[in-house]
Picture (cartoon, rainbow, N blue to C red):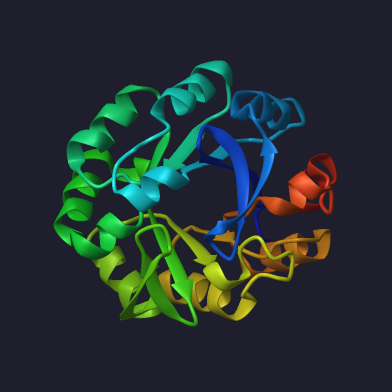
Length: 241
């Protein structure tokens, strides 16, 4: 019997506002709220078990930019917060964990500095997530601005060997599109790694959530579909149970 999957609302922050991008394109943004803290409290009140927060400016700049807003969110909510975007060194990881961030997401840093991942996993274990950001089966970095010649599965295997215990898979070409997740790529990761995988990108219906549950993912990060109302959070939580 497969376990329930966690529905994790996404809060992407750019310029201090809660936005969604289309296919990771920073020039194609929709602002959904000027107050990310208010958004976080809303998702918590509707039953979100955790929140997925991304500093989009930080991802592009290579260092956290919206830390003040992020700290406000963490101190305002009771549910765990996982954070990604511009986290590139061990000191920042440690600082964030001490500031009550529950899990740290490493993307570009994991590709460019595997030693950092190994050390972070050794010191912080389950608090570290590696984000597999893919476009057409290959890894993309630096806020999804730079595509590199590294296959998704090859990268995932190498990270698992370094001690990574949890992954997020995002198909960038589907992110923010309200199309559908890359079920094939997700299933391959789940079956190959035998480790917790959280799916993201293109999730836009309760049917998608049920299909992801059947694939055995640990969680589903839902962004634009929650903000547009294509998915209602309470219905999604019920479908995931």
